[in-house]
Length: 187
Image (cartoon, rainbow, N blue to C red; front, side, top):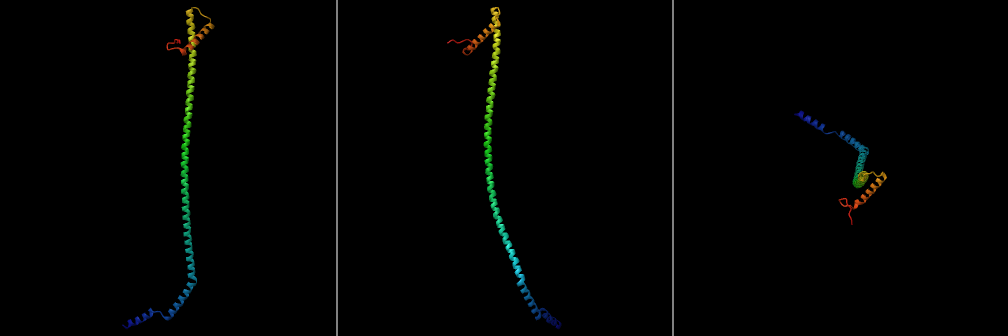
């Protein structure tokens, strides 16, 4: 057991530092503390302050960017509303223009229709007049032939034409005042 006691005595000595070691440790700590206080801590504080300032600046820039983005968004919304309003005006104008074109085209078509009807009526009148002239000529020839047979002798050509023209003129004058039987009404 003595050996154990001797080991425990030497273990205590090993466990506690010697006075020279304590002094040397205290001097080294003091030198390290002075070095840290004089050069390292101010530099660390400067770096930390710069970092804090940079972060603060970044936050302010982010806030400004957010404000600008909000302003741009409001401007875009205003422009979008204006664009929608302008698009609605353009659409309304297009509707008005289309309606005007439709009215113009309808009027033009009506005019063309009236022109076609007028031309057709003119053509009908011209054809009627042509047929009436042909009929007049045929009636004249038949009248001359009939008159020649009745009279039994032929008249000269000029006199026959004059008689036919007079007869046709007389018939033409009778037509408006004639009744349904072709007889003249007497007043």
